[in-house]
Length: 368
Image (tube, rainbow, N blue to C red; front, top):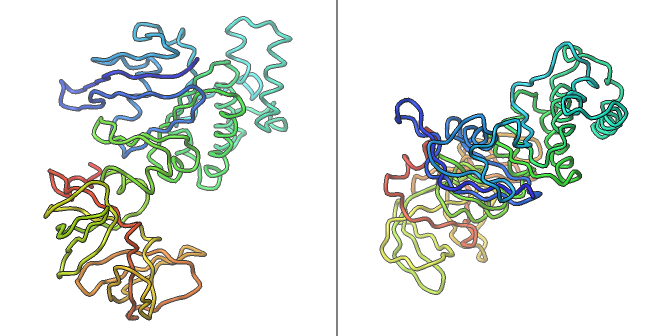
């Protein structure tokens, strides 16, 4: 069973100055499409290479299927890895590249041909099966890399930024193909990326990583709608932040005073009393109107200062009467003009409350 477990994994470079992994503990379930998401340099690719056996951890243990594999050679781990830089044999055509692993394993010719035929059909590569890598598009080349990984007949795929070198349209198509393949084959996949949308669209669960540490793990919905950490809220999608002080806390609600004496009500887990806090709300949950609706909560007057079209949606940058600037996302049915007076409503159920970070908000949100 290809479940994966990391126990207290640490890895440092440069005489200990650079921390790539810092006491990482992580469990990935059999058959799961699991993504490690974080900014460049956070250590996510190092974790993948430790699982693969390319990099040896300074401390900690790696288990696959319940078996400790720290000292198991790469070639005996039965793990397939697909890289950002597409690695194909240039002198072999598509079929030959795919059939390489079965041939090395000594699988007899007839069985090998059957494996290649099935995989070529599965990935819709039949029309290009005799083409060489330099005759293929980047997207088709990466498909062949995936096909070669499938042909190795392993139950664990490690995918290191496999789509980042492709153009946006091909990347979009291939990400769904990847998930479909993993689920059809019933294998476990660990996918590393810095692309939030990519992670959200294909993952069963996501681990958010920063500075060599796993910050938070959860499903895409859990992490997007109910993040437990400020950095998760910031890194996974767009978010508006402001600081404030809790002035009332009861019945699962808090009243927070923010800049300019404006008071905002929010739902809250736990009890806060006169605490310095961070409020966060996603742009799509802020409601804009040119009239005051008595049913709306947390209504603050403001003005439109910028707008950005994204097709069927429009981002508005709004300057509130207390001087705070927020981004909102609305459907392009009602179009406001720069300078328009509006009322912004912040529904309490979508305003997330965090304790103020010890190192400060700016430091907590930094990607460096």
